[in-house]
Image (cartoon, rainbow, N blue to C red; front, side, top):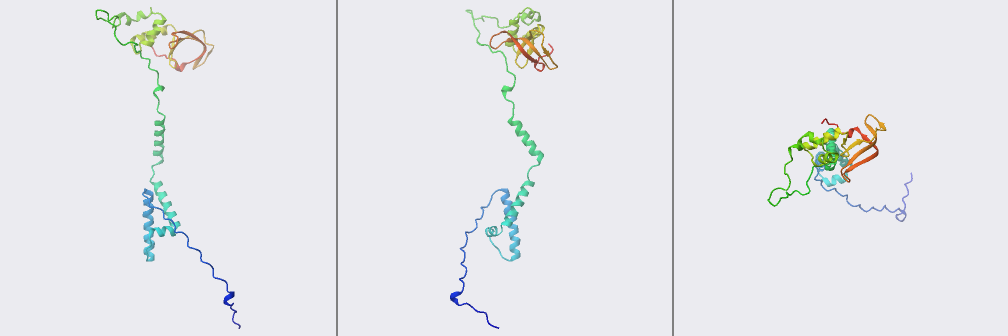
Length: 238
């Protein structure tokens, strides 16, 4: 047998060049959150068990850099623990409903407009003798229901709108209803049929109506085509 031929040193291939060492792996900073503490605790216990079995000890930074699978497993365990510690679904839904109700609180403008009378001049006018120039107390006849039958519509409307919350307002409303006027709770004014309704349904009627304009003209006006919904009809017994 012939020995294998060895090429001379000049014809031997050059040895492979060594690659430069890469930068050291970055170690994440320690976390102070509850999930970070849980990760560090679980990781420390796993490292202690591995080091005791191998008979050597390596710092936690080197272990993190050399075993990304272990880091991913620890993160999954921490996420599972945090999800199991979250509140129940029913409690979360209740808190969301409570927050939604707080965002949709009724505004003061959603209520009815308070039309309580405020005098333009609250001071008492005195005569030369120092007495009040006009009566300070209403007469007894002013509270007599029979007196309200003698008042015209202008007086009844004035008493209703400028004696809010009084017994006189109740008597004025009672007399207006006797005269076939009906109070609209949405527009806060009185309506009366000008003619028979052209359309009548279970919850509304449509036609021409008289209404009392107390805001701009203090007079009666005609609404030619108006739909009166019964849900806005004030029908309390007088």
